[in-house]
Length: 427
Ligand SMILES: [Zn+2]
Image 1 (spheres, rainbow, N blue to C red):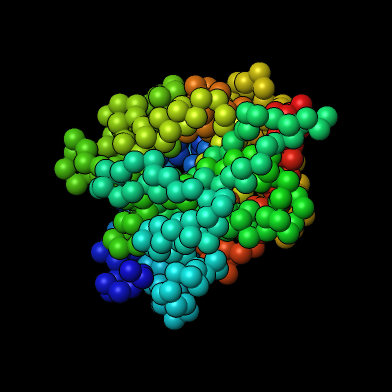
Image 2 (cartoon, protein in one colour):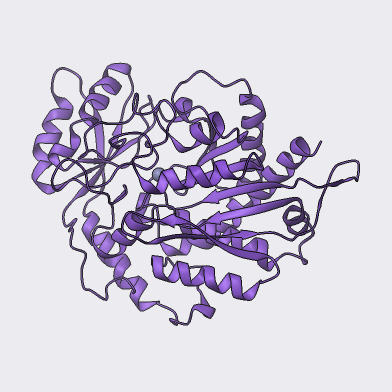
């Protein structure tokens, strides 16, 4: 199914605005942080989760809340400056929907267009296509069924050659990499970029010497869309949906934040016990079948996975643990040096600037995050959360003409990172 075949989305964002707040002191941060916990009561939604001085905070404001929110920002003697960054989010969504339909390529999945966003059905057909096209290297897997009974479908890439240590000896226990996209439903550039990078590994194997080497050194688990139900929902009902789609204890409030649902320092800072909040941590750790099943899949690999990347958008950040505390883990420098390798190579392609550091230091402390569990429990040393393009010009509504550039630069970053990891794990 393509976007628009059912007419408009059910949820309209007509005349909703995107405001960009500029905070310059801690009083303002405290004010906006406190408000963020009740914002959903006014249908106000935080697009960026930065709560730091001099970092812009992007907030969607519905038409009925515009006057009151403007008053609030100047109230209590703590004035917060803002600009209206998008005048009508609904109009942008509608324009993109029309453009996507106009440029829709053939429905033949053999012509999968890497410069387009795709439905979950098309992405799963693409997985089948990779299995059929590269049978020697690609094995499909499913992590399990989602809450709404969709397959959490991915594939493993393996050249079936032994990895080589730096001294030239062969390694029997080959290390593996896990990359996933679309844990947050509305971040469409994330699955698109994971798809692009996985396809690059396959299509350039045997041709590009670096790619060939990296594919021989590691096995790759690719899950293009983690939050399959939420992603499907963004194509049919609500373009800006973030969470899973499970029922909660509150009528009309659905889903938990799958990046706050992991069993590591679960539901303390930067997440909410309120099922109506966008950062709802779930009724308990691993309440969401999707996170529970990915955790089990990772744990079942028994330590072979050395690199986990959870791809998000937006903000252009390459982040390592911890999320839950600003205190750095003992291996922080080892991890952060990997981020630096990645973003230097990434920036060299199109000039796109990224920041690096721990999640808590760059954004703000958040509990129960994916990479805290993969690092803290599953011992995946090189665990990263990557926020892809852009820095807010389009935000979640990144145009399709940025998919290929995002894929190209991210691939360069991943190659540099893997070369770096290779040196450490096969020393
Ligand atoms: Zn995200």
